[in-house]
Length: 370
Image (cartoon, rainbow, N blue to C red; front, side, top):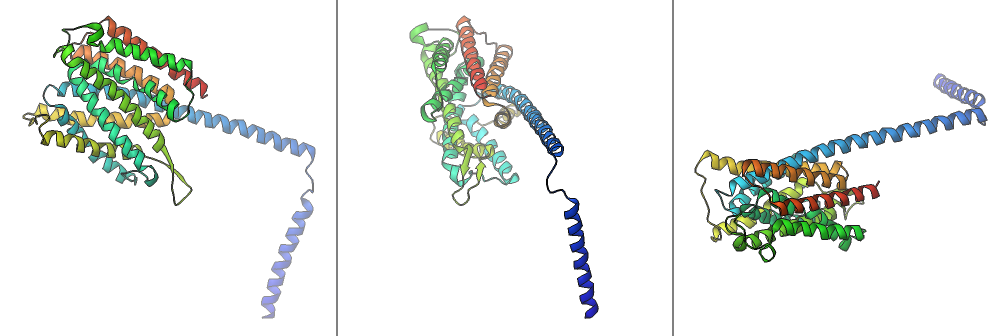
């Protein structure tokens, strides 16, 4: 016992001596030269850290914009496949095929990433709103593709950035100045040139069935598609971040949850139409028929995933401008090369107005947010 006590005392004494030696050798006050050196090192580290962060953000934004371009191409491919499919199948059957793919892939993706398929509890009502308006937008878009040219339908669809800006000004208290108002009016004027209502432009033999019989309905459907899409983006903004009621953490709603819920509503919307005979069900009879339906599901799901992912990485305004411009260009290329659709002078002027004003608004918002 005495030896153990002595050893313990020795260890304590050694520790005390080391501490005293360190205290003696440590200066009580730093010299001015040392303080200047430390401040200089800190000032040098801060710019390096800021520069590194900016480079990383810039790389992510570049990747996001590249993904947006791929998403625009995928949407044009999806629209072309739908245009190809409406010659064989009714609209509800194409919507049904898309719903199956969205439900299966959306649910599998949520389970793989351990995300809740219905979204976080605090954001589920907005996820459901996304599903409802997304179903209406998809149905209107597919119906308008049945009678309208591919490029013109896509241009009318891209009224939604301006309409989203209007909704944000009305309900989110975001700035909506005179320039935004002018852009909205000119975009609507461009949509008028493209849609060419019978009351202003008379009859046309370009479309079958005749424009005065189905054209006004399909033009309204295309415009309603843009409006419903704006509602989807507004609801996505509301569901983007939510604070849990049990914790104070804020978690982002995953886009796969939105796609899964939207697929469920597409399924519930398309099945009653077929059951109650609003549109006649067409049984696929060849490999080409099955290829059409599978292509619709795959291209649409890829387009949605790429656009949602790109919007998360890239600045929203710039990404929307690139998405709009590229999608319209791709759609006109597919329309003229695959479906022999030649736009007239009114469609060209309307397209120019919409693309130019949408790009101008996007650049203005991007510069203001810098």
